[in-house]
Amino acid sequence: MSTNANKQIKEEKTNDAPRTGYYYEQDSGSPYLFDIKRHKNFGYSAHFHPSIELYFITSGEMSAIMNGKTISVTAGDILFCNPYDVHHYLTSDECFVTVWRAGARFLAEFQSFYKDKVFEHTLRDKEFNKGIFEIILGLPEAPGDIGMLKKIAVTNLILSLLIERYGVRDKPKRSGEIAAKILEYIHANYSQQLTLRQLAREFGYAEMSFSRIFRSSFGVDFRVFLSELRAERADAMLNDEQFIHLNVMQIASACGFDSAATFYRNYKKCYGTTPLKRKNSE
Image (cartoon, rainbow, N blue to C red):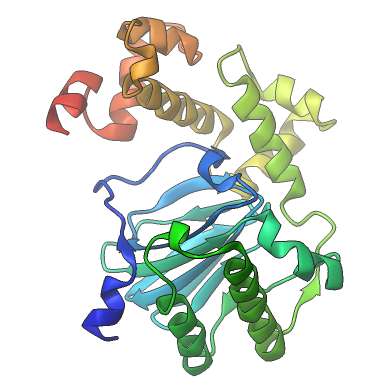
């Protein structure tokens, strides 16, 4: 890859710690999302969105959990995330990726012609994938510099080339839908008292059966899952000027923590430090 080509893609600044939280990824929810980022993979916990996400592995290797299934990819592979796939990128210090995302507006033609079809998650023809990568590299660095018609055309071109090489498959009946609904429900209710029993009842399962479904989908027990989400939401509020009038414990309470000890224990588990020390280090 040339140096000039590298300059065409925005470097995304990330922290050394994995992202936490299990949720509907808000910034990927816009139907007009269209962006390209290049960064070192530090991991990203389980989330979902209506956009597509194409991960081109530029160097190293990484693992991901897609709808509960663990996948490994290496340099030259493409990891493809279909709309509403629940996915979890695992930390890999030696892996660099280039990510292209396109929102629902740019998928309209594909979904019209290929109703209820999806792409495989792993696309491993490395020589072919280089051509897809070159198309992405040829785009302007700032999405605002690309007109709507070009965004639509580029999306359709990339997807048509992928179909010619890899084909599409029928969307599995469950294809992450249950997991996505669970995430959406928890994201809407994490600040309230929420138990595994309540959640199982909400989705029509026996508690033990639901617990197995939950762990197979997200690779972690419900209580750990919920505590990490609350810590992630608290951290976001602590760094948002909109909530500057609230103290730490008011924010912790608003995120569903019932005691200072519980909040600080879970926050430190996620971020390795206290909120004050984390803020002062930024």
